[in-house]
Length: 243
Image: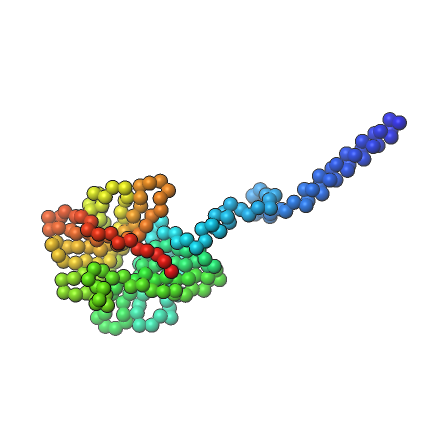
């Protein structure tokens, strides 16, 4: 009788272990990279959920620098354009779609002798397979250029030959922005100037709110530099990125 009872207990234990193994094997297993833990889950990763939720939103660039990879994307997309030479100046943002949309601030110069430069927002679609194409190009106009095909007029605004932010321009932006509370202003690209009551400057700036977690934004900041050296912001026109 004792032996029969022990056999029954043994059979019961074997059945329980077999059921546990079968249940564990039936769970979906996600393969992990070498050196990482194996995760048993039938849920999408948190990262993929976040990406799915943010699909379609434009994200301003934390760093507007045109890296080597971004420059290659720009060159691929614009190599077939005729009549105007485009050079990427700043990278303003991205949008996750079925690929990636990019927004570049670009210096544009018509390909004929003596042509004056202007600036434009160039939107580029980068497919996941590496192919790139231009979606649209929006010319930037400075005050008074709306009806002049972006050409400078006497006493009016003129576009900068060189968009580099010099130490002097960075100092002008800093002095003018000290009166602005709630955000910091960083000069990204120099767009143009106007000689009036001193000198007015148009500077593309990255504006970072001092509120934790707040998104940065880009804007054309107009600054008057008076003859006595005083600097003040006269207008701020936000760059609205939308492909």
